[in-house]
Amino acid sequence: MTALEQLKQLTTIVVDSSDLEAVQKFRPIDATTNPSLITAAASIPENRALIEDAIAMAKSENYEGDELVERAIDILTVKLGIEILKLIDGRVSTEVDASLSYDTEATIAKARELSKLYQGYGIEQS
Image (cartoon, rainbow, N blue to C red; front, side):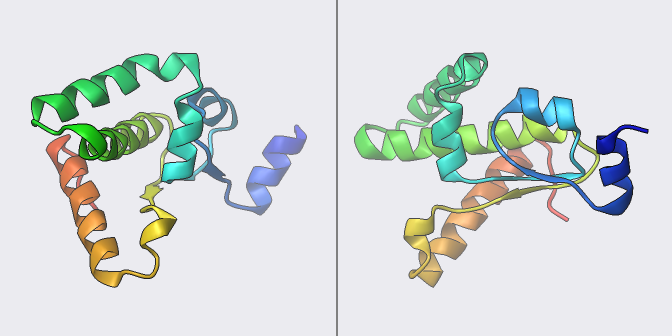
């Protein structure tokens, strides 16, 4: 039995990464995404198509300027969450930007917005 197999028997592995290759390699039970991980994902060449698709979708919704960037990041966050869900058996926890941590209403609004995006892709929250 490998060390990884032994570790899996002792603990639940949760990944905090937007690196889909790492998720596929280590096969965690659950995963987390957040805006800082999405920023890191932008530098991974394999994510280019997801990024371009997120920008195109935000533009098709008539977002512009800073709002376009924010919407594209939200869409990319959800798209990466969905890609991770394809690789794991558990759940993906999608976090809102830490800059909202002192604004309860904005945090709830952003969480609802992200949930609605997931639902638009057929992913129900549990």
